[in-house]
Amino acid sequence: MKRLEYLKIAIVATLELVIFWGIVSCSNANGNKEKGIEKQDTITSKILFPFPDIPGVLTSTEDRKDFLLTHYWDKFDFADTTLVNNRDVTEQGFVNFIALLLDGTTTKELTGKSLADWCTHFLPYPHSRQVMTQLTDDYLYNPNSPYYNETLYGMYLETLLNVLPQTDAMRSSYQFRLELLKRNNVGDKATDFTYYLPGGTHRTLAATPVKNNRLLLVFYDPECESCHEVLQQMVADKALAETVQAGKMSVLAVYTEGNEDAWRKSLPDMPQGWTVGTDREAVKTGALYDLKAMPSLYLLDGQKRVILKDATYETVRRTVMQQEP
Image (cartoon, rainbow, N blue to C red; front, side, top):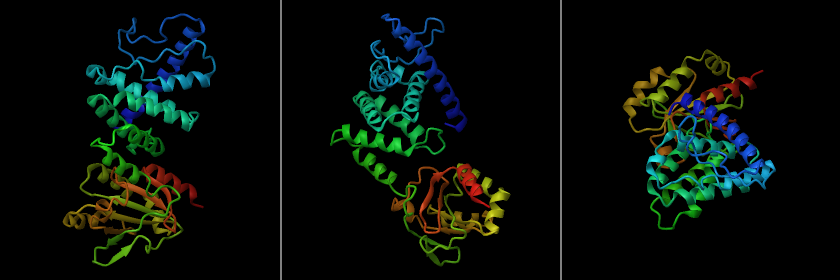
């Protein structure tokens, strides 16, 4: 899914949440027994996400939100594959759910309870499990998603591991991803590795010289289409080139794949002033960094501590430019 599609859904999600809170508040305040939102809208005849009915006795925003999040999936039929495959219902409902979890007011305790309730609802149904885990990967684990959030994604993985049977075939995969997620976080010292320069000499990340206490570490693959697009953007960025040439930042680009011929063929396209090397697949095979999408950009300081982890180029650029005198 492209970034614009994410943003479109995010906007709709915000509008639906506003409508939802308004309708439920009014219906419950009046004490009637009708549902705040019906699964079938009589005006539009469009299937909507079946939100839970919040008891009228809950009047505070905090209590209502607590009930909503811990009962969010109660009325959703995870056994209904047609419903689960309805993107307008399932995906939009999921987006609303994580938007509430990420609104800045949801406590860690409530987030944990909500995730546990959600996981226990979808786990008994293989198709629902596949859809829900994929949605979570797409929205929380994809750096191009506006909802990208490794903290919440890590809580989701921990919750999933807590409720999964010990014999589940996916346990080791989820555990591996959780461990990978905990590496090279902001403030941590970046994991050291060896890379090889075009001439054959080698160097470690730890021994790499850094100008002005800033090192942009770029893991890349020139044969990756999205990677190529971002690299072209960086190559064409005159401000970045001037920053590097002025000694305000160093750039280390590391090829992480195994096709050395493809790497050498692409070397003339790399900007002057960058240090370019290949790790001969050490980072990937050793799972030293979480290379979920390419290119993967890390902004480090002179001691190789992480300032930005797996950030978009726009975020890196803005951070670097703001720090310039």
